[in-house]
Amino acid sequence: MLDADAPACSLDLEELGTRARETEALGEALLARARSEHGHELRFTAGPAARSALERLIAAERECCPFLELTLTESGEELTLTVSTSPEGQQVAEGFVATFGDPRAA
Image (tube, rainbow, N blue to C red; front, top):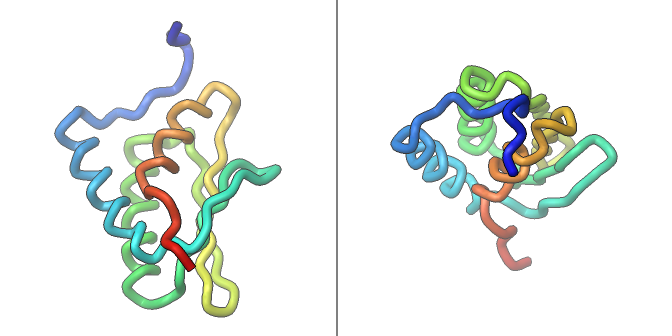
């Protein structure tokens, strides 16, 4: 049963589809995806195109899902996107992380 007080994304179905395609495209740079004490960590190959795409995605997500905490850091040749939220927002966070797909084979 859905919790009526749980935070929800404000995008409609068409916008959700567009956003899902944007995150799927970033999946090509995805190296790893894991749960952490802070939520979810997605590691990407660093590069100007990936950084720019992730920054645009973060800005867009902050508009529709302000309850998601999205942090982008860079270390060496990797970008790490940390996704965290309150327990009530976990379902949306899980869905967001899943749109990136599975990490590519090493």
